[in-house]
Image: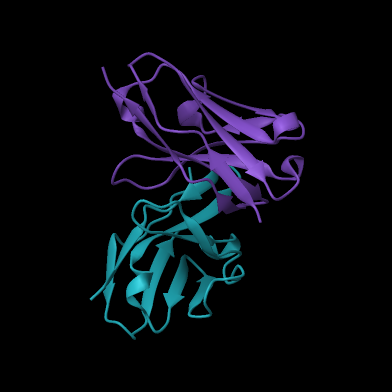
Length: 107
Length: 117
């Protein structure tokens, strides 16, 4: 089965840039989606198909995907960005696969 | 606007079954698949399976094969997920999500299922 690996935690100061990685074998050949989940809430889609943003998601959120790593980048981080972030791909053998999640802490 | 509204929290005994509903509105229910995803307390997201509301076709994660059944009632735009032979490890929040190709673009609010004797 396909495995996605995320760092358990990332910390960043307000106003700085946060980068959350998602590793997988040749993940660059797959489409990666990112979800934000705040405590007690359902996940919200923030990036889809590697780098597209749903309506209502700030331009500060961006994504990239190449080789064995996909990256969610959050620019000018705000306190309200503090949340868990999950990457997700579709794999022909496993169907939907989620990464383990990364807790973003705003210092 | 697209909305998925799930049924309320459930408490079940080990060995019992639970059926969670997910009522869709704001779009054509039969035009998008539904994913079911669960999350144990403090844990990550775990995909359980999908259902096509138009055909009724389903696909389940291997872990849940034989224990999960996903169905729908198109007349009321509602999807259902039933999990049987419950054990304590099934205690989790269960989410439905609209699936557009490979992405889950809208999610329900979640349903807490507690399995306890």
